[in-house]
Image (cartoon, rainbow, N blue to C red):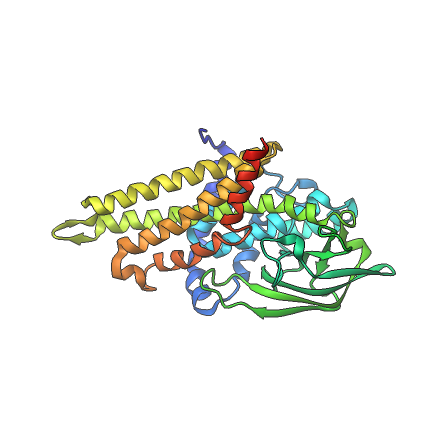
Amino acid sequence: MIMNFTEEQNMVRKMVRDFAQKEVAGEIDRMEAEDRFPIEVVRKMGELGLMGIPIPEKYGGGGMDFTSYISTIHELSKVSATVGVILSVHTSVGTNPILYFGNEAQKKRFIPKLASGEYLGAFALTEPSAGSDASSLKTTAKKDGGNYILNGSKAFITNGGVADTYITFARTGENAKDISAFIVEKDSPGLVIGKKEKKMGLHGSNTVQLIFDNCVVPKANRLGEEGKGFQIAMANLNIGRIGIAAQGLGIAEAALDYAVAYAKEREQFGKPIAVNQGISFKLAEMATAVESAKLLTYHAASLIEKGIPCGKETSMAKMVATKAAMTNAIEAVQIFGGYGYTKEYPVERLFRDAKVTEIYEGTNEIQHIVIAKHLLKN
């Protein structure tokens, strides 16, 4: 696959790259020190149209291609994986489910606000006892006149506590996959924002528990048909995975860039450490990992753009790109030596941010299962 970005796509990439350097980079220290959600950055992203890049213009979005959206996450994540995942969750699984499965009234009511950045979206599937096995969730939704009453809890919800809408999944029957999807608004009676997780990395990204205590959700906010929630969740996780692949790619590339620059400047035994075979071979492996992740990620993005089924390809991209993120971050810390273990240098942050990419939106172990199933089915 040869990646030939169009002129428009290159313009988007440059705009996002400049934005990340001018507006995002300066917020990193505060996000790290205070674990503070970068609300000002998100607002500016909305003003630039970044919160709705692939959303059709008729619903207030940019009407741009999916590749431009993925490249935006990629470029943002090279500077801040936190900002990258905020956008990925907002669009991939916070907005797209309404676009793909919502009725016209739901689309007109919610999508323009999400696409403009006036609203922030979140996705509530994972529970304390239901992670990789999404069909085992315990949150329930029972009809009560014109409403559904939700009871249960969700865990590890990205953008939680600051989001305006939560695409939420709850059990509406006895069968394993008898699950329905709902658009739960932040001011819904009975929705309680639980504890905010203290994470190893991605500081500034809110990750919270949600509690549904007789939470009242209008029937008009049910997304799709009753009992079709599991299919909705799986369809959008596919798109979510390519977003996390782009995030992983950004981390991996940033780790490589920092390592190359440091290896050329740092001298030991009278010469730059880059000329030592032990270091140069590491850099070669890191660069190869970046290019492999880039090809898989943008190939999967192009398939999504064309409407071609690509469950295997998105899982491959997610698995390879996030592995590259973790491996390159480890090697970058090693190349920096003792300095890499200090907060004075950014590779320490990349190391902490990288690990979770191998876990969320489907662990890499789950990606192996998905890929193998596709191979055996065919």
